[in-house]
Image (cartoon, rainbow, N blue to C red):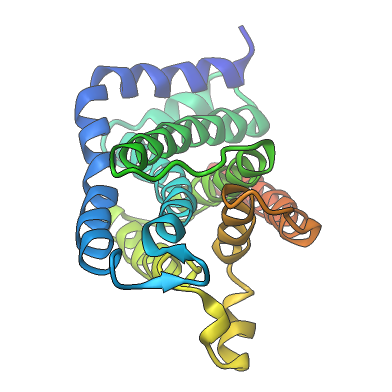
Length: 244
């Protein structure tokens, strides 16, 4: 069995062990957003020609792909600091590429589970967006990028508390500012320029375009692919640094 597949299966077995709890956890935030924003605002607020719930669901798919893929960092930190699993990987014939790829794929799997939860909740709320290949590709690239970033951050931090601080500075602002809950066209030009630096902004745009049945621009996919390459390279470097 390839080393990366063994690492991936380890994470999947851990996920399977607490699958019910994970699914409930993945459902809480989207459900709260749908109830509070959807029912409170959905009937009175329209974004262009669409209802707010139609606008919100693709954004929640993008946000869930980010948060749940990045959540693999918590699993790595727990295994690293409390169970010393990373030391076992160091002693085993596991290369840094295999480690990063296995953990990144595990984060990717978590992300697609969370996106499926959002899609089911959207269906229950009466929202049935178009799920085309461009949506899947954008979600894949977004999840892969943040899973690779999660691996890098998990190996660069010194303590579990440092990881929580980084999450508050990276994931939380991006979740609310990446075009998830509001259209960015109404913002000032300088604010739009800043938000265009966030990968989630481009993922939200690409996912929302396909969900609306509109042609997706090429640029968001190129930016997300570039983020995948940069973050994966950073993760490979972080493994080397952690082993030194």
